[in-house]
Image (tube, rainbow over all chains, first blue to last red; front, side, top):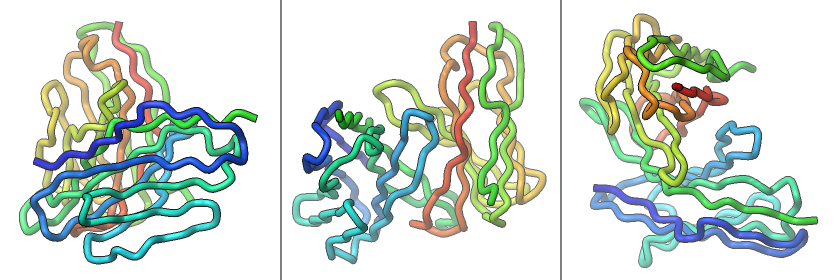
Length: 119
Length: 113
């Protein structure tokens, strides 16, 4: 069975600090996909990034960066120079196939990390 | 620019009542699903559909019913609401195939008293 672990339940930082959110996953699949989603206080779930298991290049998007390490089954997320608007719950998720002929994906979510950025 | 639309956003039900959470997407996605979010448990899959006329159970299907008569709509029915179904419900959709990005609606907050 697939599993995603986000060991940090809550993190609190001061604005402009860098912060890294950890994600460790378990899967027996050789091909898989990893995701990060952001859930701000308003409640909606916003997509941040998708990464497949064959692409171990780090990804940078503005102040956000992701470090995928297959050897340690980790997909960590770093926010550089954090801002108050970054305050949210962040979810890491792992996809697996569902349905006949792998016609869909099911996400296995971690429990989420509540990030609070204080001014 | 609608994406995935869920209604209602908030609902209070009495135990034993039934209701339907509506979900519609305008992205022509074949795959749709429902998740529930509970504190400390992340999101868990309730039911999913890989196309019109095809549905299947996810991780926590008991007490819920779904149907998919069109590509656009995927309603979730609570047959006889129980306090254990107090949760936040998210509808999601994506193109078919493994690993495609799954997009979520804004969530529906349901309280069963």
